[in-house]
Amino acid sequence: MKRLLCIGVFLFAGLSSPLLLAEACHVTEQLAVAGTASDVMESCFEHRGMPAGSLDWSCSTDKSPVAGVHKEKRANCPSGYFGKCTAALTQEALANEEATGQYGGGTWPDPLPEDAQIVTYYYRVQDQKQTRIDCESGGGQWSQ
Image 1 (cartoon, rainbow, N blue to C red):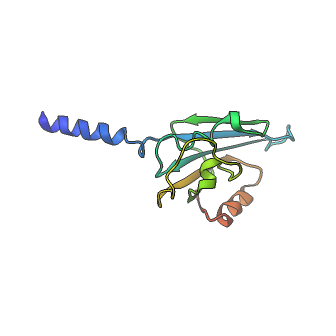
Image 2: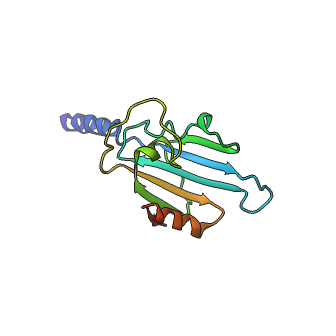
């Protein structure tokens, strides 16, 4: 019984650790040219090696200056992606997954943890080949 209690405490502590809680940002973008087969783009990104809440700023639809973009925080990214890009998480990407703008608020570790990563899953895009090229030319690693 004592052993079960120890295991339970260990599991609870591990699962409630801020570095282990999964969270993701699901993004859909309605393109200006509607009515085509690729008029909606869909992706999802997550931060690895970071505390919970690290993607709050970049996942906020309220902060998006782009009309037609919807961002939704979820527990994790869904399956069914055609490819994913894994890259080192930078201060710029922490502020915005597209590396624009500035983080307006909280403080993050400086420097970021060496193992911090941003992983972006792609479901629907205009050009799959270009998406892979953009990933790799930006220092990311592409996989399916």
